[in-house]
Amino acid sequence: MDQPLLQSDPIERGTVVDALVARVRADILTGRYPPGSLLPPERALATSYGVTRTSLKHALVRLAQTGLLATKHGVGTRVLDHARLRSLELLPELVMADGPGWFVEIFETRRDVGALVAAKAADRAAPEHHIRLTDLLTRVRNAADADEAQVAESEVHRVLGEACGNRVYRILVDTLLDAYMPVRALFSRPFGDPPAAAQRLSPVVDAVIAGDSRAAHSAATAYFAETERLMLG
Image 1: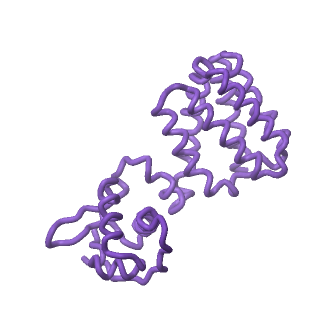
Image 2: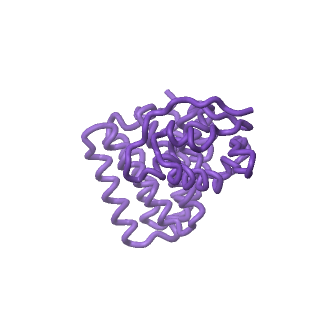
Image 3: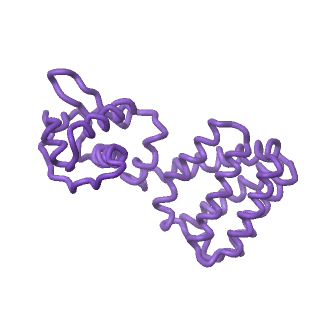
């Protein structure tokens, strides 16, 4: 069944294809174009988004590469069932579309993966990582407000992901943080007192710098459990 054409706000010029990919992907994930439906004809869809057909074609190709769309000559472009996809690239958009439905699973992954990453970072971190972690911990402690502390704390985890020496874990950490950052205001409670937030985080950083993987795993497990408790009230 063809999906009826809906009017969209025009997309500004510039990185138009990137913006269009993000817009159409969001419209798919939020149900504007449900799985199984056909997108409107290209000319009408391009007009709806205020872009050229060339830009639209480029965007549709990229979305097809992620598994969200399938184009068949003579039929049109069909929306696929994104619930069956296994693409980390979609996680931030899925969280934005249905945050509460993902939070429990994201917190579980955060605990499990975060502890492993911290342990491996303790074994593999370079001196430059130690310097950055120390600087970021100071930034958390001296933050002017909860959001500044929260952003600095997130960078600590990005550095740990980088330091762990496992590119797959690093992608997982970055993807989880990318999903978290747009909705971080919902989870700011642990950072309302920046010095206290730094004190909770310090055992993780200290263990990594000391090269003690067992202590890093234990400290990270405790840290994630406590911040999760505070985040969920």
